[in-house]
Length: 265
Image: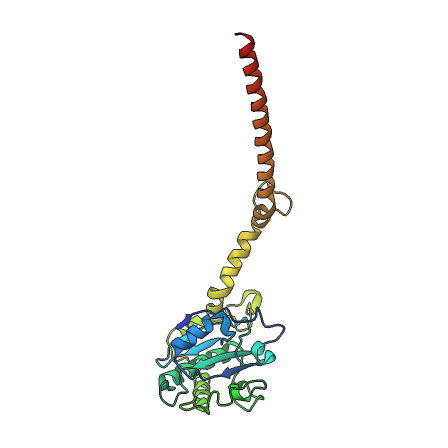
């Protein structure tokens, strides 16, 4: 999806610890999108989700889909889910709007397409859409649907499935953005698409290419990494020794010149 705003959070696993993505977990913020942004940006909160959807339909992303989030209070689910928070859940304050529901449906349909799920369904922990309150280990027993002004998750699932059945996305440009690039005949990563390519994979490839670039005249296996870490420090050390030797020779020569000058007086 082309309209997702990257926010980023320090609170996540690196990778998914051997798990694959099997489901979406739906959450309710019990608050506002701005508050969720602040909480997830705070490392001490030890909390995050992959996405957050606001009352206006604005979608923020906090964690790469390549990594597990600190969302479900369950290690296995954290590493196998794509978690989505939704603004709302307050009796007097934030409510879950139709714009939020529509955006979440689009996001869920987008995720389903990228992971090859033909249909989304909820059946406790048997389906590919889970509710946070149903996951063992959580104490959020009203999340996401039983809170005041909670999340109408069935509406989101039904709407997402209509998008999947229709074969078109409700946001123009999503088909291009979600086009699956296929190096070597397959997606580079599960759910690989233009968004993941531009946001995550290209920067990593560029970094690796720079660090592994072999320059002419280098030592066997020489590259920028070896140059920075080993060869340049070695050259600087040798240059320092050369300078020290020359300084000593200059001192000795100066001393000889001084003696000669005194002898000729």
